[in-house]
Image 1 (cartoon, rainbow, N blue to C red):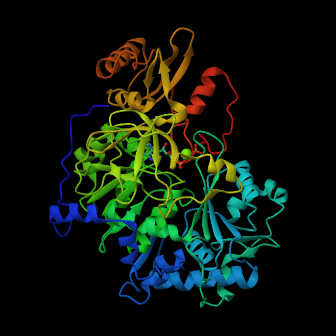
Image 2: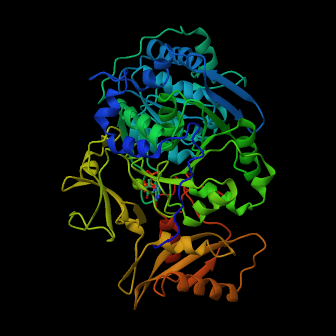
Image 3: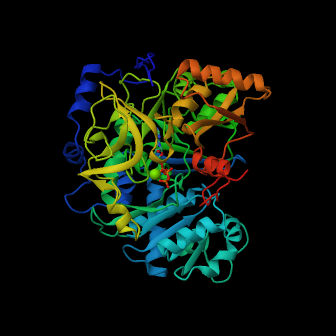
Length: 581
Ligand code: ATP
Ligand code: MG
């Protein structure tokens, strides 16, 4: 994709104006050894994520600094300092260890709304040496069952409402021994369950954090299941080094920041950058527990004076759909730095951010498996809209052919990383063979297709499974989708390859229109011409179908696999992570 427009990164978002040369030198000199030497909490052998992110601040002036400012849609608010989170998580760790007999490596899963107790519980479990497994609260019973059976979790932390939702599957979980319910003032816990509030009131608030080693398992995250059945990626305590460094140097977190990560704690972004990254840097973060609405989001940024905002393309596209005038009705001047992850970020969205917030979105790329940001648009780096940026210092990324040899720049191929970074997954839970199959010729194969330009910027092409081969031309659906949403009538688009007897595949687009736009044959032609002019006739959708909204995973990603299955009348496969209307 050729976008000639480069956004020269303005540096006014820095409170202290950096010397650009120093900044570039700093990135050039960064490496994992240097980062770990910078950290006094990183002894050569032992590390516990919870100590790093919370207890390490207790002997500093951040002790009474606000760590978590939470509010929900009803307007209820709670605030916690680092010292309070330390005390409460000690209590939770005591419940697990003294009352429930949790030992190092035992799995404790969280099926809980975005409430402060999920943060306290996760920190407490890590202190106790347990392995956390967060589950997105919008999951249905089957999705929860699959994950609890697969992980053999012994403890589930949930709420009365969510427990009710999955009540039918609870008898089918042979390994689940204890359920802790966060009552939040509602009734008593069910017989046999533990009330979080009662147990916390009785527990001691001092706890000796279990001595975990760098390589001890800490986190299990099931992938979003965009291309197949979700798998449990396992991460270790030493991963926090990666969370810390990338939060500091990619999200540009600085002591005075008010940081908002919109991802749910049920997804890897919600832990790596909704807990570990910001708190290891001692940053105050704000959390909004409520349904999406553009007005509520803008109002939250205004009221909380958010400075750094980390969100996702699907949310940005929804904000774009809500109109360019809306942001002007709020005071959003506090924002100084905005980032995006999770799906390809259409260049249109980057430019839109610059237009309405005067801040371009900084796209970055990573996966559940990589545990932390791998490729990014850093501060002070010019942004090429549509590019994911450059590899983080200490990360080597390459584009490989199908024999896993590196390709020169300009060529599309398999995006791969040299293994060995701290937050890399260590296995797929009890699927070691599948894990091993991801490593070829000394590289970790990410399953994405990309290309690199002559300046070292990486450009996402597609997920390997999504590439379209039309009459010998390889077309990445994202490229076509990005052009489609530049069309004034188009709100969102999903593009697939539809089998064709002559061309092998043809490009088919599913398009949802902006409010006030009516579907018509004329509009279809107009859209086809629009893409043809900008890309090529091969990439222009042969077929366009207007639909009200696109199927997405619960983490908000367009599910092309499902569009394709529907188109072909095939079984839909695993849909446990599919968003419900
Ligand atoms: P599964 O592996 O089960 O199919 P998933 O890949 O959607 O699910 P995640 O680990 O949540 O699970 O997502 C990582 C993937 O999301 C990446 O491999 C890539 O395809 C996509 N992605 C993330 N960030 C970006 C980005 N900035 N640009 C393009 N794609 C991105
Ligand atoms: Mg994946």
